[in-house]
Amino acid sequence: GQTAWRSMGFRPAPALVAFVRGETAIDPRLAGICRFKAEPMLVDWASLPVAKETREALKRVDALFGAKNGPLLVFLGKSATGRRKAAQLICAQMGLPCLQVDLACISGKSELGALVTLQARLYRSGVYLEQADLLFEPEGGPSKEGRLLIRALSVLKGPVFLEFSPRV
Picture 1 (cartoon, rainbow, N blue to C red):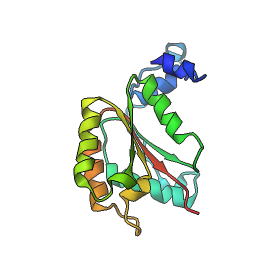
Picture 2 (picture 1 turned 60 degrees about the horizontal axis):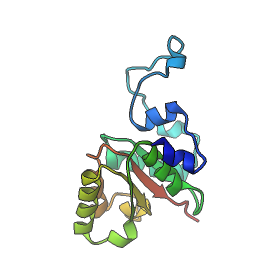
Picture 3 (picture 1 turned 30 degrees about the horizontal axis):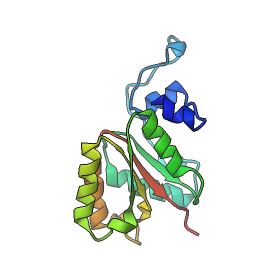
């Protein structure tokens, strides 16, 4: 767990690790000061302080995934900004391998998508989907393959990371 983080010079805050694991326990140092709200937070997409393109992408991802068993993390950034490394570090902290999948390589091959899901379930791994834009049609709706892959991945208890690059 923590050895992998430390060997790379990182030491995550305990609260971040608990959050990524899906735990809702209050850090003992905050007992009596903070509490979790039991009701789910309602997100007003229009009020998010992000670029319109990012907001639209998040709406599509939210609609596609719906309820997921494990954490879903969306990374938007240019190449070489640390998205993949962050996913690897989060998985390492959780004691999970990180299965990296280049969606361009499995596009049009639904049997490979099923194999990715099986692999992730067998090894209880996190899944990092490179080029997550390929889950969607150019018009913005989910592709048939994207819908099938996301439905299969939504049962995973480990984190699923979606890598998006800003459109130029």
